[in-house]
Amino acid sequence: MKQTRTARYFEFGYPYFFGGIEYSWPDGRIDYDGVFRQKRGDITRLLDETAKRYMEEFGLSRTTPSYYPRVMEGDKGITVSLGNGGRFIELWKMPGAYFISGNNLDGYRENAVAFNVGSDVLEAVDETFLAPRIITEGPNWVLRYPLPGGVKKIATLKADERFIKKFYETAGFETEITIEDGELQRVVSPRGIITIQDGVCEGRGFEGWNAARASWIIAKIMSRSSET
Image (cartoon, rainbow, N blue to C red; front, side, top):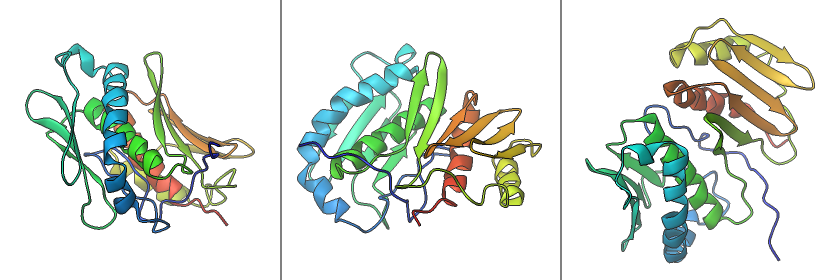
């Protein structure tokens, strides 16, 4: 019987793809690295299908030969080659809780592929986990981060306005934002809108590199969520 997936808090920081891919195991609940090694073959076959779909959804297929991605299993991990120029994703045990890194992933589209690949790996290793995702709706991207189990909204959102403005400034955005803190929570800016409702935080309207920047802001806002 298939288990229901639920989100949990990322104790080591929520993932994002601004300035590269940053993705770690969420906690110390299980031996993630050990399970990854055991399931390496199954995960390789999974990524052989999903990485190609992400490349098409995020627009990499326009400039990348059709025979990519190439997903290769090794003794220690998995490599996902995304195209010419030495662009690839490595999946293996790294310092701390990190398990993914990118090589020559200079574009936001490539790092978006790496983000969803990281979520595929996490959900394959822990079949109870619901991971963040980048969803495409036509030409638009939705950054979707489920809040940890049972949490419907971020209680400190309005109180954190000073910190959130700093997040926007650090990401290179204007700090003229409006925070709405009702049943539907929203952070509204000229670049896009972040909404929090019914246990899901989503970023919409952020285009191009702004989507990568927004992922970092959302990761920081999500760090203020809690399962208690």
